[in-house]
Image 1 (spheres, rainbow, N blue to C red):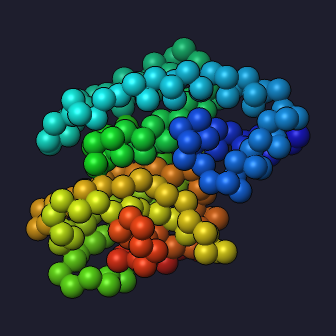
Image 2: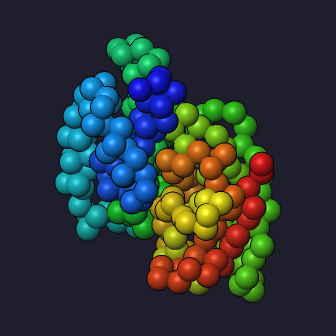
Length: 221
C-alpha cells in the first residue's frame, strides 16, 4: 500500500473504533487493514482507548456541561509531541477529533472547545435557514484527520436535539455529532468529523429522523 493510502485510511481509524464510520468507509478500511500490518497495529492501540470512552456515565454529567481548563489542549499535545513525536501526534489527533464527537453526544452538546489542535484559519460559510427566527454561522477547516467545524446557533426550540452533518457529492452524509438547542441562548460548538472537506459539498443541521435540513450551507471548493 502507498503511504498516501495509509494516511487516508488512518484518518478513519478513530471514527471506526468509536462506531461512527459509515458502511462505505468501513468496507474500504477493512479491506485496507487486511493488507497493512502498520495500520492493524495502530488499530490495536486505539481500540482500548475507545473502549474506555464507553465507561463514561452521562447521568453523572450535570448542566451546564463541565468545561476543561484552557491550558488542557496545550498540556495534552505538548506531552504527545515530547513522548511520541510528530508522527504519533497526527494519529492521536485523529482519535481526539472522534472523541469530541462521542463525548459531545454523551452530554447533549460539545463543550471541549479548543481540544482539537488549531490548524489553518477556518473558512466562513453562509447558511440557508429554513426555520423562522433561527440565526446561525459556521466556519469549516481542513485538518489532518478530516474537517473541523465551528458552529454558532440561536433560535432553535429549547431542549430539542439536532444533528450536524457533512454531505458528500452523492448525497450521502457523515454525522459530525449532535447538540441540544438553547432557544434564545446562543449555542457555540466545536465539532470534528473524519471526512476531508474536499470530499464534502454541504454542511447541514437537521432534526433526528428527518432528512430535511433546517440549516444548510454549501462548502467552499
